[in-house]
Image 1 (cartoon, rainbow, N blue to C red):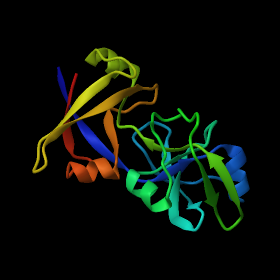
Image 2 (spheres, rainbow, N blue to C red):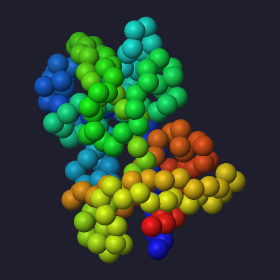
Image 3 (tube, helix red, strand yellow):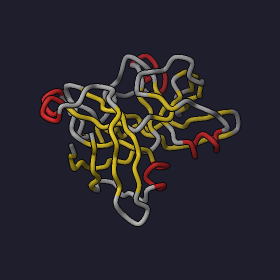
Image 4 (cartoon, one colour):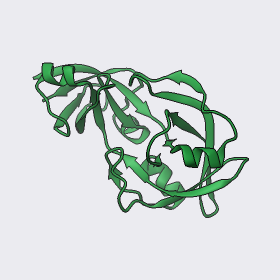
Length: 186
């Protein structure tokens, strides 16, 4: 079967616990803009991520606050920072590298540095309609000047909104722009 879905390109960002957020900020987390995943948002707050003398500034905090800390970067970012994070599903943080987060208030070193796997968000009703299961691998067909097929993992959550999430490296490899259509084959 096939389903047309939108691509959303994810830049580097962090998910924080309340404890770590409070170490880095003296104010409440504020909404810059809502994301399509119901209840999630890009915040106005940003951190600097550091590994030794390598620094990336203005890395956005994505809300709401979570029960774990997770720092998502691309492979290109990883090369720049001199780190080698695994490609992982969100929340799968066992044995992930440490990275330092810094703001004007302070800094903290956390585990949870990953390159997020490609994934297709959806809610349980959409999954049932399409006949797919959580963690199922689907193919994504791209038709443009750099046509090709990539694999992505189905991620079913109650707040799921049907869309493919890829990082900037994948987007560049396939010449994809944010919010364009691709074909999910399952």
